[in-house]
Image (cartoon, rainbow, N blue to C red; front, side, top):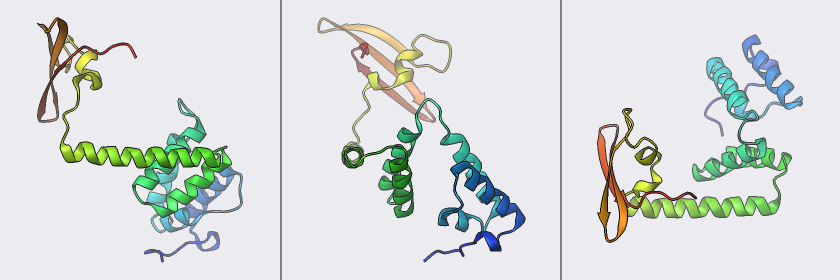
Length: 178
């Protein structure tokens, strides 16, 4: 049961109806789902979230199916039943197959498991994985201090950089072209 009432089109204020009309036109439907009907209790939030959805979910560097599949993965991780179902339906509408869904869920499960292991062990991040540790080397910008040293016959680099108030130091082989 919802914590706020569901506002049907007929009960909606003109401000809310305007957003509903935009959603229906953009999605080529005559139906508004319950997510939007509950957000309609706060018209400013309804408008803001709709504007964000239009911007973020629009075609860009990522195709619409990839965006929906990412949304499904995050929704599964966040345990959001509503979004898992609604974005799975949207992804299926954009071409996601059963095989793609099963593989997506396997990746989400693996990522959650390995993330918990990495967090539990507090594993230090390898310097080569941190973009600024190498991309900004030697720059006058907020890049790290990087120096090279010889060790065991291999050229190693040490990087010291800051994120917020935390200071990190990593050493290892320089990144290879991958």
